[in-house]
Length: 490
Image 1 (cartoon, rainbow, N blue to C red):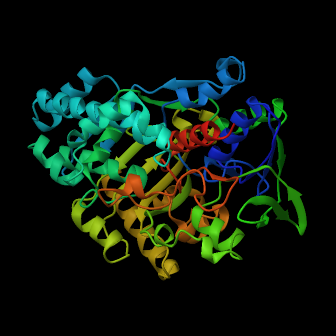
Image 2 (image 1 turned 180 degrees about the vertical axis):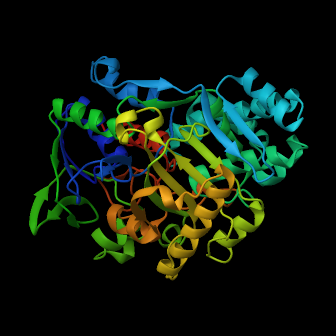
């Protein structure tokens, strides 16, 4: 196989994984990153003796990371280690209910029965359905391109097509969850999984009820060095394979010749390529790097509804809370109203669901002695020109009031350090259009089929990876997008 010169735009987790896979195939690979660090959304920072993982904080399906080391002939444990969580997340409801989502299914079923009165059989039936959706969709929707005839010639694809009605694509997540559980708290619990890809459970198809299987069956983990160790270990692996990373090197343009990608322009210098892979958000790839070729734009795809975004407060707290875990959720009392505000009003509800991640629970040196590092996040709409300064001030007070009431202490008086990330910052720092976290939303029945392909249908030698293209956002799916791209390239 001839050696090809592969240039990757963006050192997000998908870009790094693609670089590794192409290097393993023997290609010469260079990665061009606009920031002075790799990782994209999966980044970190230190402030006032606190360390924060700035982006994704939940780690599932570690086998997709391990696979990259194995492909390179390395033992994963020599480079990257993680521990399985006994409690995936702790949930706080407004009625005072506290629910521990145990990794062990039997223990979790008993917890649900004890705290809500819901029969254990309800949970087992639900998780069996989730596993069934996964078995039908995994090889078809997640591990292969939906845009290659070859993908539909596999026997398991035909098998999945015949079972298509079982993926529950014509009900919403919320409607399906109502059918499984009598207790509204359990319905809300499973509606929450729509936020894992920035969607609305009241409109997203019940096919997304596959997500709990990924967490409950495969488990949730904490990387020994924190979430950013995923990036640092993979960059080290890539470099050992000869991949060259260029930082502070924003790509200005993709150069075409007769509808074929031939080079990129970086700092007014042309760099030729046999293969170009964009890990940049699909919207900015076209409107920024290919703006000279509007006739080649996939206009319908670029007009699709974007996923939700996030508002994050990074707080250094001068106390340790024994009632909190690594992952914590403080539910809104009115979930429907919260999602209506995000999706219909493009606003922030006064009682938002709050996600609180505290990595110092597992990695004590992330905070000074007797302190904790709080990654405090709420789901918010994508940026369409809202008055974010006003929204942030109001949301901050509402979050502090909520947490202080539930935890029984004034949190505002415990904040030693603060940093804030809103949709504007997410867009500017990670080139994510409108600050959306997952590219397009999954609020339609056929969203999985409508994502941009991993190879350009109009431009030869141009490929795409990352959360804004197939199969979607989040660490596992971004890693799978790299696999799909690699499988497409000889």
